[in-house]
Amino acid sequence: MNLLLVVFDLALLAGLIGVAWRCLASTDLFRAVVLFITFGLLLALAWVRLEAPDIALAEAAIGAGITGALLLVTLERLRVIIAGRRSDRPDTVPPDPSGPGAALQALHDPPPEPRTRLPALTFALVVGSLLVTTLWHQPDAAGLEPVVDAHMDASGVDHPITAVLLNFRAYDTFLELAIVLVALLGAWSLGRHDRIPARPAPGPILPGTLRLLVPVAVVTGVYVLWAGSHQPGGAFQAGAILGAAGILLVLSRPRRMPPPPGTLLRLGLGAGVGLFLASGVYGLLAGHGFLGYPPGWDYPLIILIEVAATLSIALTLVALFIAGRPEGDDRP
Amino acid sequence: MSGLVETLAPGLLYPTGGAILFALGLYGLIRRHHLVLRILALNIMGSGVFMVLLGIAARGEGPPDPVAQALTLTGIVVAVSATAFALALVVRLARLTGNAIILPGPPDDDAPVDDISRLEHHAHTEAPEHIEPTARSGERR
Image 1 (spheres, rainbow over the protein chains, first blue to last red):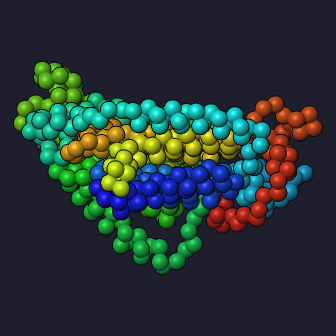
Image 2 (cartoon, rainbow over the protein chains, first blue to last red):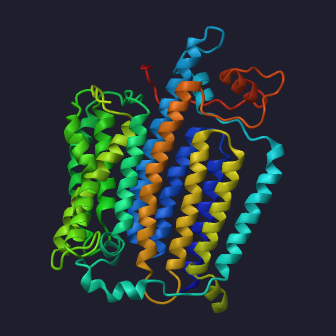
Image 3 (tube, each protein chain N blue to C red):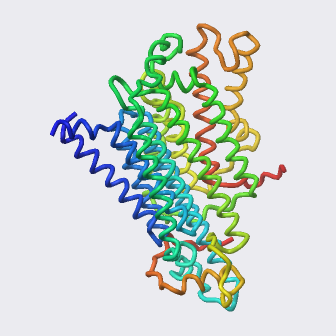
């Protein structure tokens, strides 16, 4: 506790609020997305300050990295779609899909009308000040930290957050994996995927960098997964790192890479939820309760579920980036 | 001075910042029309909620509450899935209607009925600055 840290906190919060404001006030969507990625990175710094290195890892990899890639590819898709539609109409200008006019239409949001400013401002101010007053008058409480600490020896792992995620509150994590899968099914139900519009210029630099970067990402991902049982890390962070490597591969070599076989892909996507459910049902039948582990089997089961969850999360993130069912997949 | 430092502990400062971010995202969500910007606003609101959770978890003596941290971790992964699905819906909407903006209120009497022309009509009031395309692409559907 010293003055310097308070100055750091205030500067960080001012930066976060400023970047968020610039992001939401921007009329150019590309600029808004870049500011949002910056916001995510600053947020990771805030999580480190709040003694949450697990969340900081996840925020940097997922919040800033994967979300940023998803947003950028969506902007490019919107630009191509809207420019394409405009060129179909002979009475409108401009037919050039890569021209500034097309980008302007697709990636631009007109500034909001002044008449909505006062009601929106009042509403946001009322909600914000209510929140602040409530939060300032909350009593200090140790929360569930002592309870978790007292039961750590029963969890099978040494890192409290992994213990909460995969043992004490395994139910939440199981449902979360299900939500990730449902989001992908939702995206797939919207149709077959189209080719990713932005393609890097051919050259020796990208393949060379990838050859170096992807193995490093894979090793880092596996290490982060392994480290999760005794220090910050775990399935989500590892899945995000591996997913980012997958997105890089998809972005750089979309033509030469054959699509994975449909059955194998589906198995991988469902592995996390499936294995979690199987172990949960086994626990129920063996008398340990739903999602309870048999005594002595908690560590191997947690590691097994984490490996499957990592694989599923990584595959799902890449599939969400591609958005849409795989090409050549004719099943309904 | 030490009293001030005591008052501005992270356990109080960050929940306040989270509440401000939440309100800011809410304001953006109400005022902006482009759906991608609205998704960004929702994400900023979500980050505000995470900041409140983690700030409260860091209060008091001893290590922070691991349950709140695990909840936030779950929340981040759910947020990215929901964002990806929302973005897929926006792309689908753009493919069907030709734009990704929902304009407020009933159209003006002299405004064209068609979506694209309506957008042009709306954008006409303020000439936007020149924007470079984000990437060159020879491919169209």
